[in-house]
Structure formats: structure tokens, C-alpha cells
Length: 223
Image (cartoon, rainbow, N blue to C red; front, side):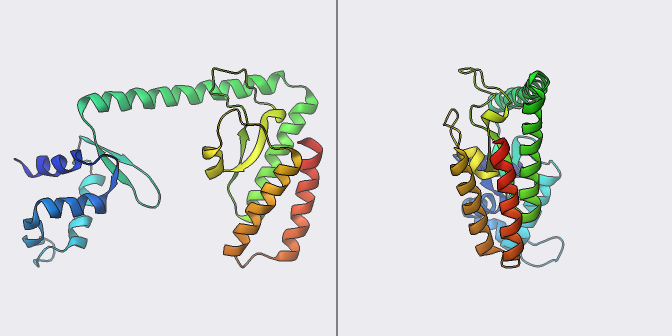
């Protein structure tokens, strides 16, 4: 069996995507002789760190055509792709790209159909979200309570269907869950900022309170 086939054979056995370090550990476990080789760069015995570095470089250079690299944070992950799985992944990626175009068109159409007042509300919600991120170093996004992707409802890109969530929470919140009330929305924003300030001690408390109250007052008027 060729070396690359051995590497891929080990990756095949992973039930889910794994980091390059995890892959390297499994390879060393399956083939202990790996760490008895000589490192070509240093002429010394191969170490796990050097092996991981070499494996990472091979992945970056595309030397494993039968794997998919996932740019997860903080560490990228890899998974084995059979021909059938590869075709399935390609279809999913094409569908996702097409869906993004459809959603962009829907957002543009809904915005065009909106009244001037509702367009102002949309612009103001977007501006408030950007200001929250700017002054508090956060990652809030506008999130549709009723997903525009769903075929079960006639969701619109409209201020009445938008709430402010962090990126992480927007991925967790289930479709068609009731939109936050204004009081829930303000309480949520405050809690996220309080938790963030426990980590980032450099923020000016007095400025923070003043800016936040002004932004929440604006939110009150358009939410």
C-alpha cells in the first residue's frame, strides 16, 4: 500500500472531521515507525511536531485529492471524501451558493416593496447593529425570526421579522421561534455586553453606559 493510501485509510475510519493533529496521532498509532524516520529538513529523528507540520503542508499543497478541508476555528479539520460523498458535497455547495443568490434577491425585492417608513426602520436597525459592534467589539447580526429559507411560511425581510443576535446565537435559534419583544431584545443585548465586559477589562464603563442607552433608545423607536 502506498504511503498516501495508508494515510487516507486511517482518515477513512474517522466518523467525523478531525484536526490535522488528531489525524497525525492516529497515523502514529497505526504506524509507529513514522516517528523512527529521519526528518529530511533536520537530519534528526522525526518528532510529532515535525510530522504534524509536514502533514499540514501536504494538506495545504493539495497533495491529498480525496479529502475535504474545513476551515473551522481555531483549527482546520479534514475528512475523507469517497467519490459518492464528493458528489454529494458538490451538490450541497452548489445548492448553498444558489440559495444565497435567491435570498439576496428576496431581500432586495422585499426592501423595494416596503413603505418608506419600513425602509427607514430597516436602515436604522442595520445602523444600530453596526454601532453596537463598533463600540462594544462584538459580532451582532440582524436575524430573521422566521427564516427566509423556510418553505413552510411566507417570511419577509421586514423590520417586524428582524431581531439582533450574536452570530453564535443566530445559528442556535430555531426557525419560527417568536421574535423577541422589545424588552427581551434590550435585556439580551445588555447581558451579552455585560458578559463581554467581564473578559475585556479595557472598556470605559461610563462611556459604555451612555452609548448603550442612546442606541437602545433608537432601537425602541424602530423595533
